[in-house]
Length: 108
Length: 120
Image 1 (cartoon, rainbow over the protein chains, first blue to last red):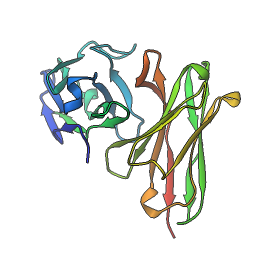
Image 2 (cartoon, chains in turn cyan, purple):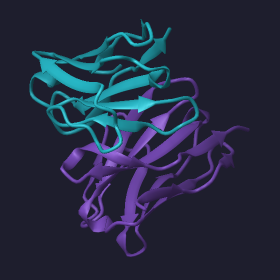
Image 3 (cartoon, rainbow over the protein chains, first blue to last red):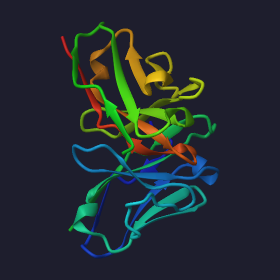
C-alpha cells in the first residue's frame, strides 16, 4: 500500500480550475513531486521542489502544500491536460521514494 | 539532445533471468542518479530504486529489496535492472529516469519503457 493517498479520479470542465491532492505524513517534511502520464507514454515531470516547473511545462500548472497535503492546481484546464497524475515524495523514513496511487483527470 | 534509451520488449518464462538496460546520451551520466519505476498493466507507478552513476551507490525500495539488482556502468553511460529468477508477477512496463540537476528527488528525463512479459 502507498504512503501517499490520491483520489482515484477527478473531472474538470474545459477552461476551469482543478486541484489534485496528495496526502501523506512525509509531506510535512519533504517536497512533493508531480508527474503527468498520458496513455501509452512515459511519465513527464510537471512540478518539483517548492513550486518549480521544468521548461516546457505551461504556467497553468502549479504546486502547493499545507501540512500533510500537497496539491497540484491546473488553472484553466485544457483538453491536452487529460491524463493520470502521480504525486511522489520520500517515505516516512526519508530514505526511499514513493508514489501515490494516481489520479485520473478527465477534462469535460 | 538529452535522452535515455531503453532496451526492447522481453518475453521470458518463469524462472529465467533477465537484465534490461537504459543508456543515457547527451549529458554526463556521472553527475546523476538513475531510478527505475515499475508499472504493472493497468496500474500505477511504483518506485523500485535508484543508483548514483558516479560511485554506484544504490538504494532500493523495501518492496523490491532482494527481488532485483540495480547497477550502472558509467563507462558506457548505461544503467541496468536485473532479475535472477522471474515470476509471472514481474510482467510490467519498466521505466528508467534521470534525476534532476537539483538532486535525487525529481526525475526529469525518462526512457521510453521496457515491456517485460513473463509467461509459461
